[in-house]
Length: 487
Ligand code: 6LW
Image 1 (cartoon, rainbow, N blue to C red):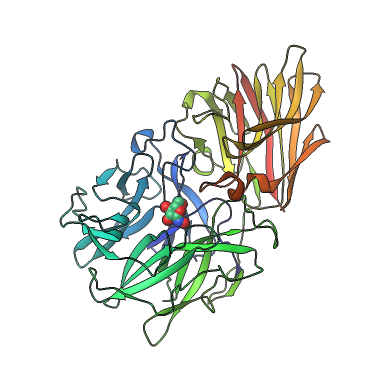
Image 2: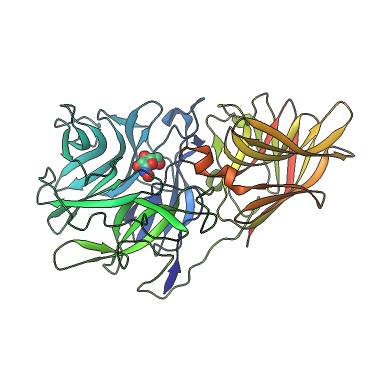
């Protein structure tokens, strides 16, 4: 079959993948969003469905008033002896911790911390031992990929942390994962930073402690010299073997809004790249160490994608996320209606406004909903972070009600349009393509805005654009007839 990349669209960076009970499971970073660490499952590595989150209880992860792009960084998902382990970092509290579960569709354990520095922690279960890797500093102050052995029941270190590899020379050595493949220990990592210079590099050894020999063909996967090409920033990946014995890397990358415009606003997405091992024991990723849009792989199954998202066909606890530490009483869910209770916390605050979102999964879509308020303001937001978001909303003023389109870019707040509406209800809609969003109220266009100002190049940070519903002020807001339709 031929599949098309990305295999998971929208802001789901730093993928990590494991196999259990004949299925594949994938975890991604979530930063300031709650619940933390979205989880997906797949039968074939190409078609992925979200099944929930790993960090579903506020006690598991401190996100209260944390900065955007703080919080939960790159996770690693592993399955060993009937148990799933998910290890990650809260970058805001500088803690590496893991949680476990025997039922990936259920709740995960409380966090178990590991006293090793750095980010991007990973686990290797090997010959009765558990190795804990991260990018950080070892016990003698040497930085690189550092490793210790841990007791998996308690998280206690059983050995000192030792630097085992310092990469191939690129900046920001990150995302270490180690694999025992037929007795050889392969160490895969990312270098170059998670922007246009991103890459995956590799080393190997006959012991998990090294000495690691760098692959002579490093970087083994990068799109940094592939131009002009929409898919950029390929890096940070995990290696997996499928049921037929074929190997793949699932990695992150992003799609520029246009071939000649170096902006991406959908965040870092998930790409699947076939890998072939050569006689020299090293692998080639893709055809030539780059990530293509299309690949032919073994298997006869369709690539399918959910294109329509409504209240009725999504699950509140599987498909939607909040900012930081939400107040549950402010969200009332019905089958075909969402009621939000506003507070004085706004979308501009580094806090938890009444806000619930799904990720923007593709460039082109049409989105509509009907919103009704009694006071304050409520509406839709295309939200990248507190300084960059486009809001189309209904609000109450001294004179009555109006709809407003407000563009927030880098601290500039621009009300592009206000439209009188007779009561507190309006149909609001957005039509999007690669370059712009067009906003409508009751079927009439009231303005438009460029996608590029919601890009990571403008906003900075590690997240992507999400589509949120929000309420601010002391109000009750009802949303009905909600539909996002990707083209
Ligand atoms: C992550 C690091 C990275 O921890 O970005 O792409 C950081 N690589 O490995 C945040 O996602």
